Length: 586
Image (tube, rainbow, N blue to C red; front, side, top):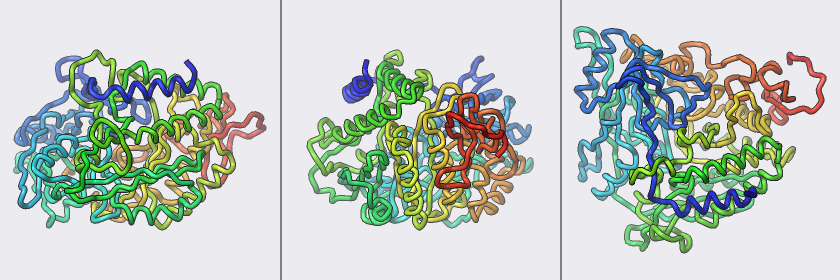
């Protein structure tokens, strides 16, 4: 099958397949009942490719059961971690801190506790999936207007990682900004029974620690969110040349409440999504069923991955760029999955109720079992989609300079970022400064990229150096804050120093969990309590486990050597050199 036929086949199959789906399996697997377990994430692969183990997994159904489980762990000083239904966090947040640790799953904590229509407040258990929260709110004429785009994350999980949508309006796009109260089960003294429930409200300063916590404070049992009356949204995608992108970005975010931008640098295209409230009486029953979040046949996924692997193996930069143009053209022509009536796209603007337009993920629809013939594209059992996700938020004042630097890289090699376009482009979402101690420190734009990851950790990528330079540029030259639920290890190197309220967070952590039973090696490293975020070994820079300082951190046998960046000279990247007389040390 030719390259373009392969991609076209993929999208034709996806567009026809909207109902049959096998939701992903539980991320926790045990060999004997609920004991001798391993835990992973939705992608089946942590940044360092390690396996996390635990002695057992527990499935509480009530807050009282959580208290009992935490008390037992606290009394015996046993490591414990909350795990969610799908675990879409890339880093090792779900690891219990050792094979003797315990996992407490929130799978069965999935109920709506209360909906107060008059006050527009909704209380849910922490294991409620975003899709169900949105649906239940809509039944009561309410909506949580600012949410992530993927509805397969739990309330507890999205709060722990500071997940967000896109907006500079009101309090911004992060869900934690709309938390008005929370109940969290933490360890306690022997006199208190080794566990206690802490009930936090807006008047409690400690809520600013609990609402973005990385899961190190305890188990969230309930969350109350401030909602709004249901409204409609109108969405229009507009494609423009990217020549004035750095000038337009801030203005666009202030003009459109839910707007975002997708940048395709090789095509010199900026795709603006104008997304705003419209009156409820305005006609329209639009629905957003985003293509990458639809159920996809395994055969199509295999074809898509095979195409990308062939491009990498042959170094076919031109082929990848042409494939990216072909792919983005199909996406634009299909309105990215928007329909005006739930069935067909007839033109912009697409107008529909907020609950049908804000988030999507129909690959999670629980229909008839189909033997895994169709699935979410990243389902680890299929092992077809293996990728990196790098996401960092750069303050608005620094964004134009960052865009200019990326453009300078593109001028040096126009085809270098086609791999990003093949995987959706550079997605730019707006997020506001937060009172949360581990929330965003300034109004910012979040730059999110997805790109090829090899099955072999020692195999470099096509244009490896360009992607590494952009990553380091965003994080270190422009002080980007890492998305807590995404990224490779290097994004978290000394990241905690970028948060002026980190000491306040650590103070609450020490108060709630002085033994650190809810902490693991990764959270200790990211919070600056332990060294080891950088893993120095052969090939470590290829996986983002280190920033190279020696050629061996790259792939010298494949002619990839450690070199300075091309625009950001302080960067150290793995660059392809056909001939070199380099010394091993820089």
